[in-house]
Amino acid sequence: MTKSQKTTLFISDVHLSPDRPEATQRFCDLLSRQADKIEALYLLGDVFDVWLGDDLSVPMHREAIAAIKTLADSGVAVYCIYGNHDFTMGSTFTAESGCRLLREPVVTSLYGETAVLLHGDSLCTSDVSYQRYRAIMRSTLFRKWAVRLPKSWRRKIAEQLKSTAGEMSSNKPLNITDVQEEAVIECLLEHECHLMIHGHTHRANRHTHSLPDGSSATRIVLGDWYGNGDYALASTKGIELRNDQNSSDSKPAKN
Ligand SMILES: [Mn+2]
Image 1 (spheres, helix red, strand yellow):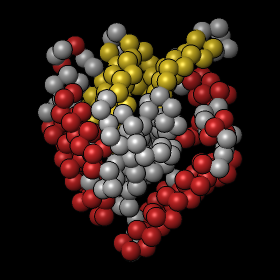
Image 2 (cartoon, protein in one colour; image 1 turned 45 degrees about the vertical axis):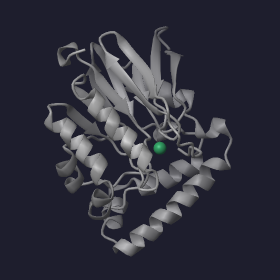
Image 3 (cartoon, rainbow, N blue to C red; image 1 turned 90 degrees about the vertical axis):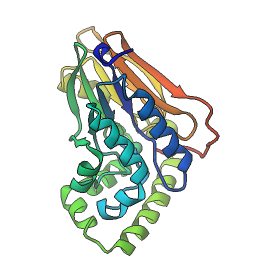
Image 4 (cartoon, rainbow, N blue to C red; image 1 turned 30 degrees about the vertical axis):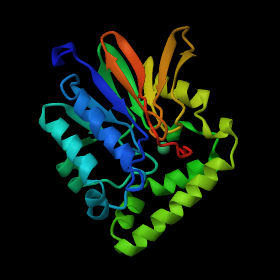
């Protein structure tokens, strides 16, 4: 396959962390394998398990960021949206990685089809306590305040958030932490799309939804990188969900 054949790569929920160097390695390997085949890469949130501000997290993720930059420098357009674990990336990150940060939902033309791209947590509308928490954490005011805190405070807060997020999702039934059909339909209608791509739930799948006008829409859910490295490739032929086999890493997944 050559670049002229046009393919776009989608990845989310890698949850890169210094604790899991094998995931970083698989992520870098995938980017280098795909480099001459893709024209664009979308990172749809939670690529990093925690982002403590550019001053702390850019050095922590130097290898992955360098791999993204190599891809960007080779002519691949690289876009990134925030997830619920990484939402304070700033200008140092964009300069070092060559990524363009986009605000979700991203509506874009994908090989003749209009697609809406998002992390996915905003669609989990049955999880009321999470949505309340999200509204505070994702506000511009909170993010500006958070990255100015002393480094030691930010490290402590991150540890706290990780355990709270784990407890919040592990104590809830699966249907509560999954996306809600009504929220999906509403988003598709609002953006006049028949294609949605998101991550967050770690439940890789392809879903079909019926819209009120009788047409149908496709929703692609990207998986995580705790087991295999899950990703999707879009081209004029459609969208294919794939995963990298041979993973030895099997930590329980938390969205
Ligand atoms: Mn998430």
